[in-house]
Each structure stands twice: as C-alpha cells, then as structure tokens.
Amino acid sequence: MAGMRPSRRRHHRKKEFELELIPVISLLCVLIPIMLQGAAFVRTAGQEVNLPSTDEVRYVGQAPAEAGTLTLALSDRGFTLGSGDRILSRIPKLPSGAYDFAILGQTIREAKQRAPSQSAIVLLIGDRILYEDIIHAMDECRPYFPSIAMADRVETVD
Picture 1 (tube, rainbow, N blue to C red):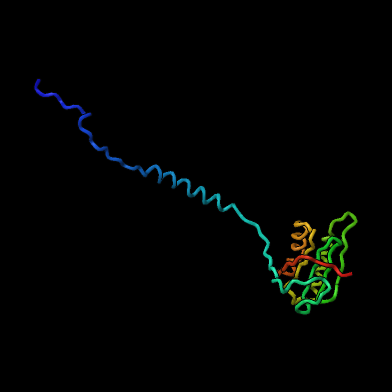
Picture 2 (picture 1 turned 90 degrees about the horizontal axis):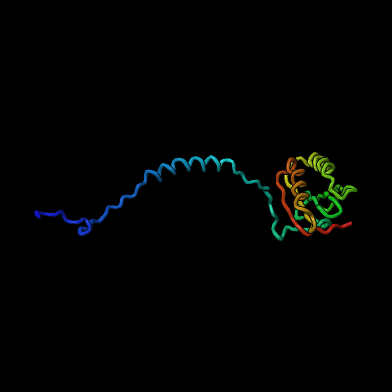
C-alpha cells in the first residue's frame, strides 16, 4: 500500500471568513431613496404662539402694560375685544351655545382698520374653552394680527 492519502479530518484548516457586503450595499441603495421619498410627504402642522411671561399676564378689565394692546377674551359667555382698559366689543355666544366666529372675523377686521399699525393681539383664554375654539379664534385673528400671544385664567368684568 503505497501511500494512502491522508484524511481531511486530520488536517484542520482554518476556513477564511469573508463578509459579503455587496448584497447589503445593494439593499441600502434601494431602501435609502425610498425612505427619503417617503419622508418628503411627512409634514408637521403647528401654530406659532408667543406666550407672555408671568409678569405680563393680566385679566380683562385691568389696564395693560402698554396702552393700545388689543386683547380678545374667550370665556363661557362669548368673546370680549378690548384695547387697554376699554372694552371695544362683546360678542355673545349663539343660541345654540357655539361661538359666533363670523361676527368675530368682522369685528377683528374693523379693529385692524381702526389701528392699522397694530400687529399683535393677546388671547385671554378661560378655563373651560375647547382647543378647537381657541384655534378657530386664532385663525380669525391671524390674517389681521400675525403676532398672537396667549394667556389663561380670564376673569370677565361686567
């Protein structure tokens, strides 16, 4: 028996491990553009609001820090538009219990015509006012007064 070939089991060769990156790169080349295209359709909506400091918060009927500051109070009775210590207009709720946003829009437009240089308004929000009503009031004010500040705990003075 001249020579038998040695068994492969006796010789333990270290297998070389090679990482194949080509399939991973191909997958990423397809997934990244798809993800970027999908991200372009995601938009976040928000309302820009200027919150006053605690020193600036006031109640309806009290004199504001600067004369001529327009305030719009939202309470459970309706809207009250004021400037300084004067009440310019009261807009009661409709008989159905909803706010009258059409009259509010007209009143805001008239206030802007009386004071064209005015660009800010302060919304004074009552405790039990719905978020939807606040946003709707902001939408009525924004075309005429782009700078909107908000405050809470409105106490109406009759």
